[in-house]
Image 1 (cartoon, rainbow, N blue to C red):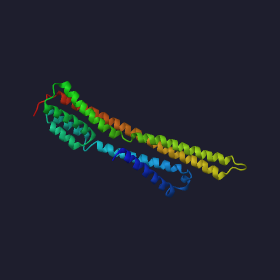
Image 2: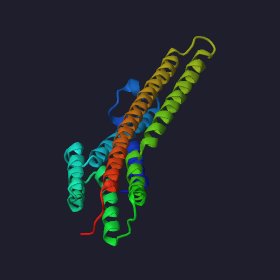
Image 3: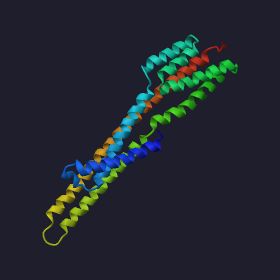
Image 4: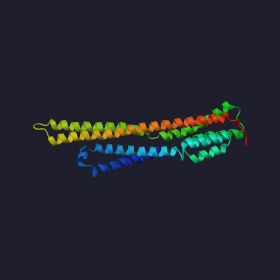
Length: 244
């Protein structure tokens, strides 16, 4: 599914669910926060959806089985000259790292079969180029929707602040009336301000934590991919190519 389509579905569904939750499940004291609470609920739902989507994508990107065992098997196959075995291990693992390494192995095999390799430097340049092209396809998939999480954190804070301001305006309006202040409207205004503040903080904090968590996890994963790819390139470049 395209990113724009997924985000549109999540956006519409979040506001629909947010409205239902606001109207039929929330206690009255939270409803006193006004209709901006619907937006805050929708933002929290969107954040949860993006968190689960990223967890699923990252789990899929790690592939099947242990990544360290996979890399060890690939290295052993390369050392014994079994390039087809290394490619088969990549196909079996089916993760982002495996896809990137497979592109380098495919390029190596193609150069050997065509007899176009003239030295170590040319070997490294060709394989490295193939690996970089594969990385440009894989890494953006890992980083998708991180900006959405950061945006949700910012917007939720602003929506909560807007609700706070509206609630305080209502409170001061109740206090400014001639005669005795309207205690009910004063209480409602303060309640609206505090509920929106709390909702904005919950969504904002959640968005920041989720963004930092996934950013760190993806950075570590991509660093590991770079290290593994570099190791494979060095091993392939150090081998004396021979047509089979």
